[in-house]
Length: 197
Ligand SMILES: NC(=O)c1ccc[n+]([C@@H]2O[C@H](COP(=O)([O-])OP(=O)(O)OC[C@H]3O[C@@H](n4cnc5c(N)ncnc54)[C@H](OP(=O)(O)O)[C@@H]3O)[C@@H](O)[C@H]2O)c1
Image 1 (cartoon, rainbow, N blue to C red):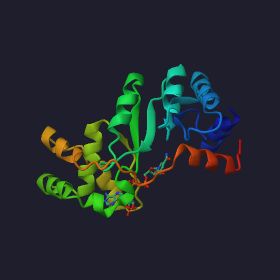
Image 2 (tube, rainbow, N blue to C red):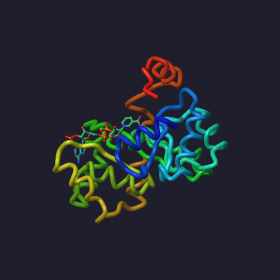
Image 3 (cartoon, protein in one colour):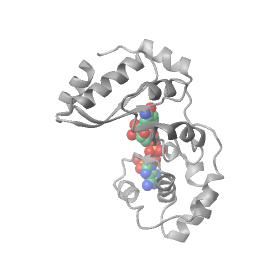
Image 4 (cartoon, protein in one colour):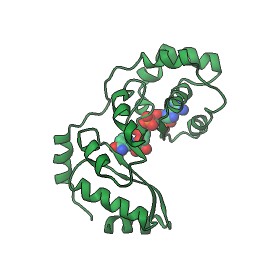
């Protein structure tokens, strides 16, 4: 709870829009209860999880009095997270995609299907990828340090992919992550952190 208070003070806001529990390690059940308490106290408006993909996801969701609004995990056309979405459906939790454009991977961005659709709609390949996410129901927060890209990344609401085009993009799913960390590795990393409350 002290960490949430400290975060709120550091951000200088009355209420935090979205607070995520970042890893499925340590006292994650107690941490989730503190997140719920923070909502009840008006310190936080929405709470979610990140990187919970083991059975600990269901453990938290089943016990939660406030279900996670989002689960932030790796998700992009090469790793579309179909199975995870089925597991989240009972809780009304939505995927928030990290690496939404595969961390800028040129092979992913250069996939012929994106080039074809970009040409058809007068958009860039990345805009087509981001539009696909939106139509898939994913929340996205692509990162860029390039002002042109930042502007482009917002400019995806004046066109729509057809059902057939969405199906074509589903075919590029390789079921392969760019970044893989087992639960054991996450736990090892957690114990090596210097915890600052
Ligand atoms: N919860 C977690 O555990 C977790 C893990 C990993 C990442 N994240 C978060 O996820 C967010 C996204 O991750 P990310 O930045 O690694 O991956 P990303 O958003 O998939 O990709 C960023 C890369 O794409 C390029 N890019 C962005 N917009 C573009 C555009 N319109 N056209 C061409 N290239 C474009 C960027 O280059 P330019 O700068 O040149 O545009 C950058 O190289 C970050 O905020 C990160 O902190 C969270």
